[in-house]
Image 1 (tube, rainbow, N blue to C red):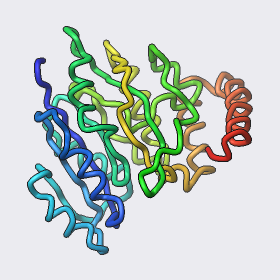
Image 2 (image 1 turned 30 degrees about the vertical axis):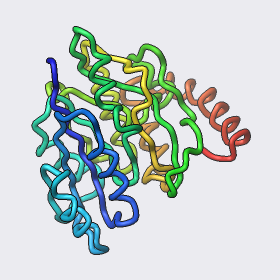
Image 3 (image 1 turned 180 degrees about the horizontal axis):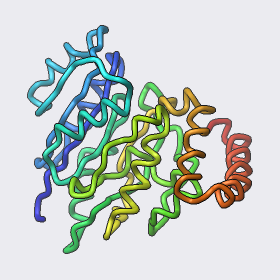
Image 4 (image 1 turned 90 degrees about the vertical axis):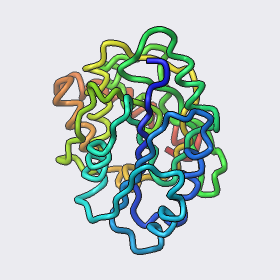
Length: 250
């Protein structure tokens, strides 16, 4: 697969203050084999006008009501025809203009099923505020998610050969299960050793931290068992509190 088609999908609802930066981070890529899809949830704040003004950079887009973030993501998956899917939602950005090219160049001779990398956090002005609390390991296995979501959803690409829909039963943590299942089904997981994305701090899960954690616990319980999940949450909780006290953020 010399030049795989990368389907980059952006989900947005009333994102007039954030969508342009996201579009710009994709339109400036030096890698040309990109399919860019935007799924808008019937915004009424001018977001659709911004999308229309960028029609030269957007291959496909829709604007219609949805049943939540993960329903919108499933719509994006249905529209994608690339070899890999990558969700860069409104407010998030690809790290740099050469990131996609560098990532593809890192494949070598073996085509991966999952590609992952690092993430930096940014504020609403686009300033970097630091790394995520959890860092991706040099080698990633689905069972590593027993320790939490070690790779940001914005820094993982999944082959369309194995990708599954998001479980809309979950409103805040379906991305955790989606990534876990991709890793579970993957034959070859590739560490790009790159920072792939800039993640806007304060997303849906962070705004709903308690129900999001409940959902994540339920997912972990289903895949790893109740007792092992309870045991794992002792060190997870300790590391979380230590990080918050030290960095004054989570």
